[in-house]
Image (cartoon, rainbow, N blue to C red; front, top):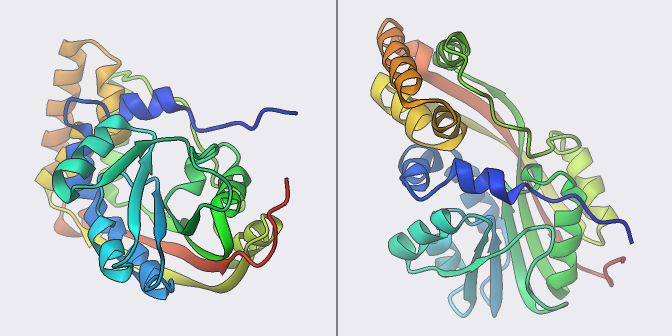
Length: 275
């Protein structure tokens, strides 16, 4: 059997390490992307669910909404990053499990619902994540997905990226795949091919205005920006950070507005998942 490509767990552990990357993500980026995921939870029939997997749960931002929507269920937060799950345990008393969305550590037909919010594009083979969701779902179980349709980064993003490039700060290796996830019809096709019948798909807008300080903190303290700075020497990292902060201070408030669109989908397992 051909091995399915999976998310690069080593990259994720560098990006969200134990030195604050996960906490920064939780404070500064999670609030930006959370609303579409809440809309998907609202569409899932979870009232009678007994077991729910929040795959790619990150810092547990969706744990409380899932508990409210599924009051009888055991909610299990699955993520590849121990640091993320550490925050999830602290902030939401999450029941956490380190795992790969392409190879979930759960038996076949063992849960009633799976949430894949901002997860599939982190996999080199997004279809593997959908197939795994179908595998662990019981017949009649439901799943929800959230993927990116498009984004319009603020001008501040170009200033940040140009500054790190100027100082030769190393880039991070690619560790995901957005292809086939940016249109409703493509997401529906992906789910159907995985034995999950899409019952509704729609697009949600995102808009968020950062400040100079919150944008700088988000890029320098968390995510790929923090990981890139960690890959260079301390003096270069410090100089690049100082230059970026100074240049961000020359921008207007409108230059910190992030806009995007999200594809949301809900589906049901109506037949035996294909192998």
